[in-house]
Length: 603
Image (cartoon, rainbow, N blue to C red; front, side, top):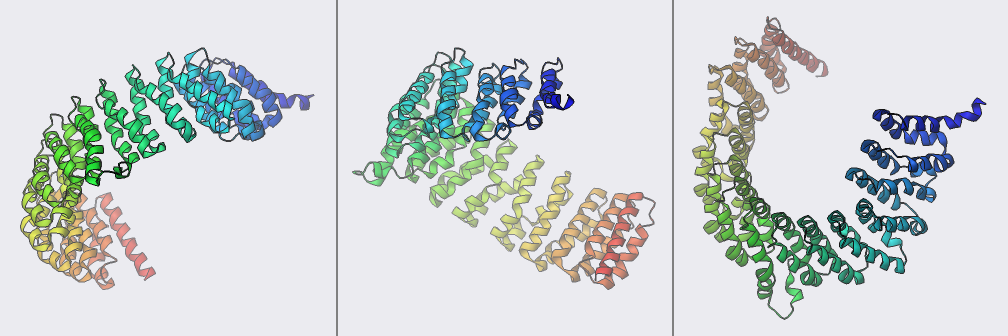
């Protein structure tokens, strides 16, 4: 008897647990569905487990969400794709619940199952499900249906396709804003599956309905569809149908819609392409460019750059370089640059920061003359901005300007501001300057660097902030690599050696760090004659932190110097440190001594 009852055990336990008052127990049971399905076998899973789940009336969202997720990967447990349709009923029920995240997960699982189903099964089972949801009395079912059309449509017969397009059109005009929002969100995915012949008529008609919706939440989702539709349409159709919508949206009464336009405008231009000439064959390229961009897109973009809402200006300012790349330089200088000047002194620091992060990229677009006359003054004003993020964004992109105007002009106009920022009160600004120094050094050359920036590099080693001191030590190494050991021997090493006697132990630790970084660049000879003696002397320092750092530095020097130097200078110093009263000093000294022994064995 026990053998007969045993197969019933998993489903009986599941039923008991799913009726339990403890949510966690119900949740654990749902998460074990795959295990239970394996125990039941494919046939009993189809005939017993799935119907039970369809009838399950749990009202806890967490349990329902877990069920929606589990069912999405359940095809192998019901016997493969030929039986995938049995999973649709429980997911259809989940598509109608009130909680959004449950519905979204159910739709996601239905899409995953639908994409694996056979065409005949899609026609027999999936498309009727989509129709039922779309005709649902409660708005939640209609919202869910919008996300399924792109799976159902490609497999449908022509008559059914026409019906599906009609249903979607009705959803775009639904009484409930939530349904129209879902229709707007999924329009791009649905449009990608629709035949080109119906794209210009049916889909564009739905798009126009959504763009004229009285709810701004629907209109802003329609904006998101603009670029997706623009890529599906022929460029001339994009100009005729989508461009006027974008231009109108740039004047929308809702700032959220205008914000979305500012974000999407460049993508729309990409869809049309940078060469509108071919759509106006009777016009010269320059005239055509001005008619297409100058009369429509540029005024729309200028409106966004001068918008009343800071959020819209931030989005528009962040796209200014990309937008200028698709314009000819004359249009950019005439229309966009005046706005850029205004934005550089905008009342919102976030607008200025967004502008600073991209404005350097305008230099290659505008060319040398326009950069020198128009952009350099803007760069300088942003470099002196009171908000540190603005200054940081300018500093990090200086190399783009150097490629256009050359180092001489860059050094004359911007270097004084850079030197001033090297002592900025915000440590992140100082850090950005340090990280830019090696690149600047390679561009300026040795002579100019020594005159203007050399002293700064040593000054940073005594900064109050650890990150600055550490970056300064790394900076010395990179400069030594750039200008060579001879230059470093003349300009860096003497000053580093002087600082070994600094009264502040934190600065002495920084010098030890700089020494370990410089040694591999300087080579064995200079390391033995100049760098090793002060490090060995530092082993007698009274501060334990210095002494265990000495042990670490000596360990890093072992591969660089000869074995005779290790035995004569490094080992005795480490032996002495290994007997230090401080436990950390002894630990690192012994680590270094083991490294010496290992080097001897491997050597």
